[in-house]
Image (tube, rainbow, N blue to C red; front, side, top):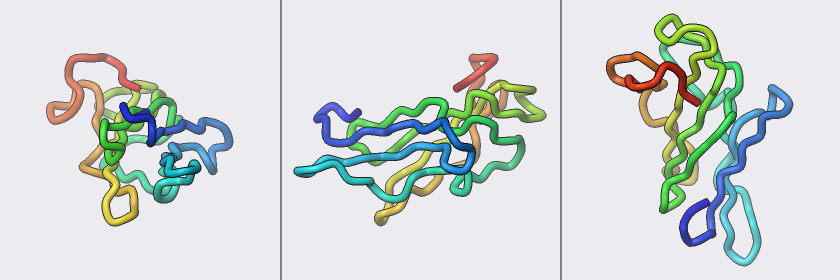
Length: 116
C-alpha cells in the first residue's frame, strides 16, 4: 500500500491463468488501476515462470510495482531460485521496465541465493 493509503498491490496466486498482481486505486471507491499484471505481460531473456505474484511491493507514488516469482527457474539462478520483475504505470498501462532480475546475475540481484 502507498503511504497515503490510496493505492494497493494485491497478489493473486490461485489459478495459473489469472495469477499475478492487481493494482487498485481509491478515489471515492476502489477501482482497478490499469489491467492486472499477469504472465502474458512478463518478458524475460531466460528462465521459466512458476509462481508470478508470490509477493509484490509498490512505490510510494503507486506507479511502480516490483513483482516476485519465488519459484522461477533459470540457468543462472537454478531451480526455484526466484526472480523479480519491475513494472511502471505509464499512459494508463503497466509496462515492464527492463529484463528479469535473477540471483547471482551480474546486472541483477547479487547478494542473495534466492529471491522472491
